[in-house]
Image 1 (cartoon, rainbow, N blue to C red):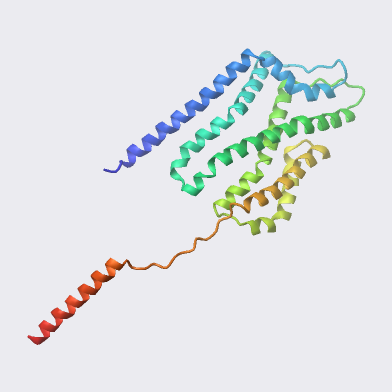
Image 2: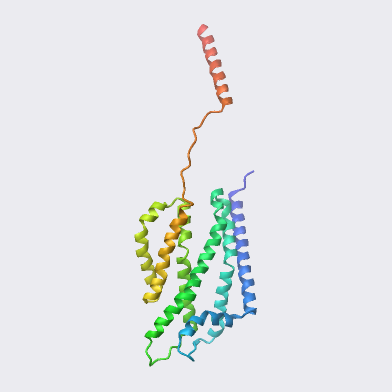
Length: 275
């Protein structure tokens, strides 16, 4: 007996709940380990290093809110725990949707999970080690000498998370192109035709999501254009080919049966005619 639609829907909801719980447990476990060692304070100091190194000597960041010194480092630690658990979370999402995919689509699962994670982390690393130093140095050089910069730690966290998310998503361009080509939404030839439009769009996106300085805008737009070319190169290996349909031939047994039935029908018709 086939499973009832209601039972199937409930079983999917139960599986989704279980996989969400596993992901939350993984993030919570890593968060607990990070809170014990090295601790939220040390993790935030590492995150704030690009800004503090660009500030004048002896200048520190400030915390305006009452519970901000506690909550902001905890948020940073939770963000790090989520990033460390990201491969496991992506695997849980893939395991949930994999049963509904074809065999050739399932083969892309693990490579997509690995490449997505590596590219997202690469985007954040590029932002942290290169972009932040250039941006904060550029902004500090324009600051008037009559003021003492004292950024708020919560505002800094909001800025950092926005930049991390922008660069992490931007570095996913090759994965997005490969998926679109694999699904047959676009072709490699179309991607080549749209290259000039993507370059313009990349600079528009960079101007919107980054601070109003040339350094950060170029640091986001140029890698996006290079990753677009990398996505086109990778999409060539997974481009959809139209299957060649073989001519359908009737089996030999079926042909013999049809001939026998035709002969019997002709014989019956002759008998009726003789009568």
